[in-house]
Length: 434
Image (cartoon, rainbow, N blue to C red; front, side, top):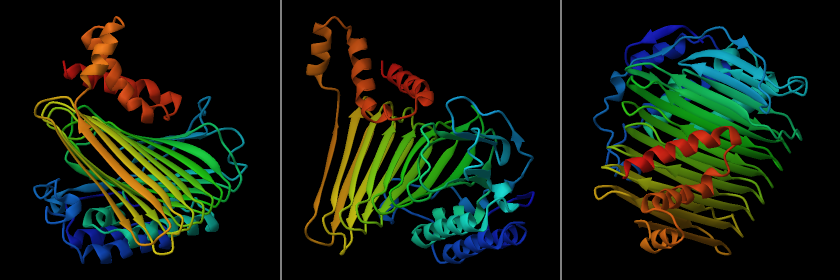
């Protein structure tokens, strides 16, 4: 990848950026395909259903500068209880590690600059290229395509067939930049029968105005299982946009968890696509906007294969003058017979000016399916508070227990190394309610 700074995202600048990339042809082809589609679309507005409750018209996306500054990767000792780590600071890859023996078994954990330098074997490169190109083909908004044009840094994880790993991989994006666009990309590919998990952390400095435009692409091979845990805790001067696609093969399983806490505005979307018969997907999410934050989350459960199952559970609490939006869609294709799909969104309103919008939707194009959705929005149940008080808890302790317990159904799935931080974030937000 080239080292340069670009002062805007005009069409001319984007073309120049692509032309200067020192990377494999297949990666440039992804950028070019995204740019062609990018030129045909307008920036999202409130006339678009997905953005009707989230106004991004003031952002002036074309004026944002971006840069790609590669750096040397330090190989470090791998922590105990971790399969591998990759840590990036801005667009620079700081360090990487793999547990002993995994490289010999064919596991690859590489930064985008290493990918650009040819770190991937041809067979893996073809899989990664196919995964990225599919997301470009599926992209239906200009922000997502902008990401695939400008991919500035990122990570590729490949796990070969039938390899089962109990310890998670940890990919960390740290960034202390100000007034700059970042477009990190993560590609995770598991071959047939591979079973593993990934913890993805996105963090920023306490100050600095960052525009994060992220892509996450996961390909789960037949009979495989991938668990992916996202944590986003950027500062309240910054904005986060994320688009992700998980493709689930025959008899394969994808568990995708999202914990979104940061950003003055955060707009996250993840689509799970069941392409193989008997596939299974679970999408779990938590969000807790405060102050004047706006968090908008969208999930899609797309059923293309027969006899597949999917379940979404997103839970949010809103305080102060914050606003949350959740949009969930179950879409069942004509050939997806015997689909079993469920969608649930639960919201707690913890302030008089807090607002939560919940829009679950079904699109069923065949018979012989079981699909349903549900949504609740309300305050803490006074009966539950009274019960805990009767057991000796103070009103404040009762509220804390109930709110922590509300999120626990999702948070309990996160790896142990993330549990303390997640609970501390929730606890700090609860204290603001008092």
